[in-house]
Amino acid sequence: MALTESAIRNAKAKPYKIDDERGLFLRVTPSGGKWWCLKYRYARKEKPLSLGV
Image (tube, rainbow, N blue to C red; front, side, top):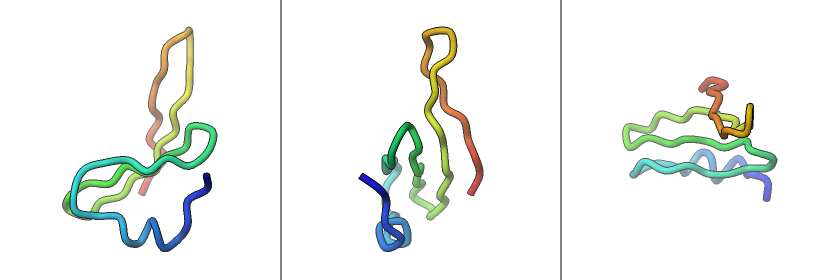
């Protein structure tokens, strides 16, 4: 399910992540910080890649 702009703007309060599609997710911190990350696999291991704010 794709993320909506309103869901991203309203994301705060506790540390969690909001999943998008194909490994893309938004990591939210209690202070209001938001980081885009990508989950991928290399050599049979799952790894996160931070893409920026």
